[in-house]
Image (cartoon, rainbow, N blue to C red):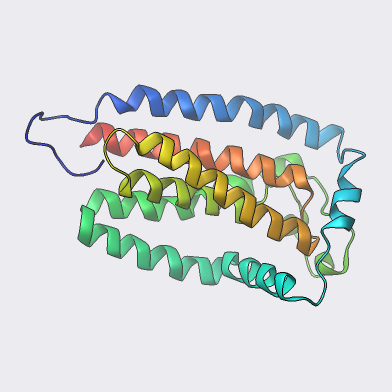
Length: 214
């Protein structure tokens, strides 16, 4: 939590080790998955999943297209900025900064994409991607969504439930945004798993810094 408790001058310092452990637990499989994605991907089952989840013209497909649009950088920047301002007002400046930092997770995702150089699926939806943006692992949409959802879960949950709520929120964000990206045909399923792991790690590291400094 970002606000102070009168019972202790540093009431949330004890959370820092747990948050750092969470970040480490997420980063280890993320690095392993990134190495696999660099040299051995995609998995044989991934094209089948991509095909089975492909969007059609029904209401559900339209909802997933809206989710994809929401996750695009210009729209997402407006969403995160608005939430950061709101949380700064409600919870204090550190909370606002924490929300804003979830957007910066996209830079970490972009750096990994350049290193891994995993090609996106060959679908109609990926034909307009060029240069570094043509790389697939991890999904930046998922990284940003998971990081933001986890941060909001942490900030809004009751004391004692913060980490659990953050993880549940992160799981929900991965399922929704990950499904949207795979169904659109612009990411392999394992791209979204990597995005979820990096998003959780980013949440753990940034929250540990700010929680420790309060």
